[in-house]
Length: 478
Image (cartoon, rainbow, N blue to C red; front, top):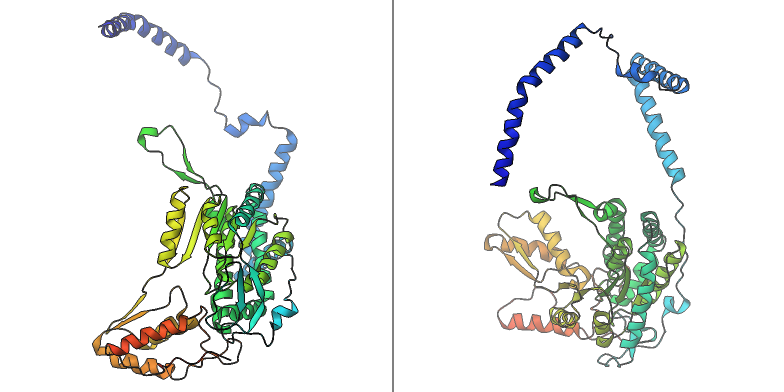
């Protein structure tokens, strides 16, 4: 009621004052009509009096140069213009190259024992791994690669995680420039030492050198290339629309480092499985504590020395990336010992155990678990393209591959042609020691894995399958 009364009263005052306002308006309009209006002045002329003469001279000179340059360009023919464009681009590339900081070269050599192993000493098939030590042997020859390594305890792992937290508190303040330089240093080390990297990986996991080159070197370099090109863009703040209800606010998504990332990785790609989480985490400002498999721990000694040298070359904390060796106790400590997030790559059963352990502390987990990886061939398939992919899926690293094909479904009309083309290649495959020349398939890495695969073949034959090649489990070497 009060609001309405105020509104009516205000309206009455407005209407009452209208005649007086109209008379005042007419008087002002008549006075403006009689006054002399100065000629219109441009905005630049109006500001000219307040601009220093030196500034006006600079602007005039710049405008004159632009006009002359444009006139000269229009007077040239297409060939001259193209030559000028090429010269400008070349000058830009040269200047950018000269201003780019030099990428330090690091030197990390294999020891004499790492190159030769322990001649004459072999691991005995069926020997159980001790609780405190990890045997290091070549799965293709069973020769010992070095002395047994110490299996870390939970307390040791927790101490390592504590050191990583201190290092990460410093590294999270690092610039994009420093992080990119670290990745470039790692890339240069990989290119300069790719032969040694492949040989170390092949001897520790049993894979041939060609599989090591593809699965260890190429994929790691490709990830570095992507991070250098696109990583900063996807980690930079992003604007979001706040919605109509919050139109007066600004919404932004920001990406902050997680902290210390824990990783538990398998044995099939010893080099890539360490450097894959390393690259992403250090670029994002995190620290990394990675537990390598007890079946591929020997190679990590060489890789860890290289990592430390790369960190030192760019001024990064020495404890930013650390490698853990051990068994289930060490793996459990990675999950429960204070890491801020965990990634696990391995079997489904162990993945469940990781998730249960992480649930107590609500530690976020990322799981990449095993599957059955079906390979489906339809009647319309191009066998020229399909068969090489099938062969790679089945035989790369003896099938010890995250994306390896485990089941093949082929439609009946194309079945015989598919099998015929597959056997043309399968009959020519050569199996042997990883470092032998001309080897297509190496050795199974895990103890007793070959016997398990053979049991699957035997079971299939008993259920009606036909063996077209092999089917016999060879005796262990030596």
